[in-house]
Length: 484
Figure (cartoon, rainbow, N blue to C red):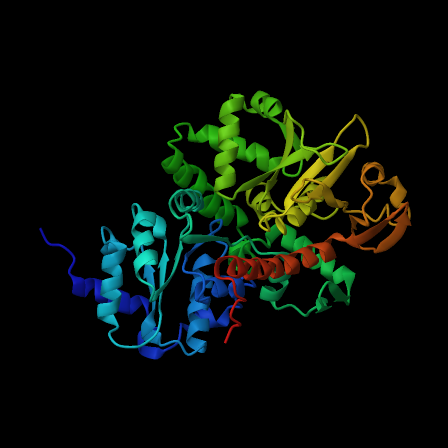
């Protein structure tokens, strides 16, 4: 029986890495704007003090492979020898059964010579059985390598990385497009920009709101945001290409789920009720699935980055001992469009999608985000941020209306919460107007939801850079090296 030869593998690697000949990536990649998260990922990869492999996680179709290609382009711009950069597509039939160590050797055989570190990118790594066990020795024993792995089966990657990569792997979650990234990638005429940290110039709120409505319906996936062809059939793109591959393939393979229809029905129910308070009891009655099974399924859906569960706190910001009620958000409001169709800004459901979109700007930050709900009437706040000591540090009431701009006192739940928890500042979103009023010891600020989404998106990237600096200080004792 014939087997693949080393020369066939090397020839395939040469086709995958055209920069070995031309010293540049393909024009199609260069024509695309890079995601704002390029710099944080790049710094994790090149920082000499962090001897770790980067595990690039994220939902399907958010641009992980394109980000890798932009990383390669940036390394080439930084004058890294093109022969020292290799991209390997692990799901190609030629590479089945190849160990990572053998692939490294074949890359070295294909690109002899050169000096300095060697950068290796293993894409679709979930195709390689026990990849984490093969990656660890490369991290431990090859100080000349800088390694990044990525893949589509996000739940499997995260579990394997967490279980086996302690101290050797750094996970980086690439979220769906933030609103600020969406505006940048669309290359529309700028109607809002940051002139200094946390200060913005807004030219036209009507135009920005039109862009925000488009983002809420279509903006989380780069292809859906940019391609008229894909946008003309969002159900096919989102449901068939993304959701079904996770529900029908990734999760059943990883967790041994037998009743796929049961999982699919639960996800559809949760998606339709995004940003709504639900309970295991309600979900069980509606779906006919047992409460313990529902709890497991929600954990699986979270691991796949399809949904995010948010817990309830009381009027003092404390978690309830018995967590009967909670909220579930889609991690990307465009998933709703792919399942149920786009919504107009005056439809009732659009308010829940605005809340989902605002939450999606922040769920990947690592901030402690909950919602407050207590008592019987007018006792709810949509978002409560807490300190490590679980004390409320920030609150946001999410509205898609200008009704409360002149009378923030009518935001009953918010008023009751800040009365119990004096904060320097509290926030509420509006549709198109700004407002500011001091109530008691708290300044209540109201900004349009689109402006808040832009602010959160910009801040999320800045926070990732700050997290990177903190990691370098913790593990090396010195300041991070500035980019060349």
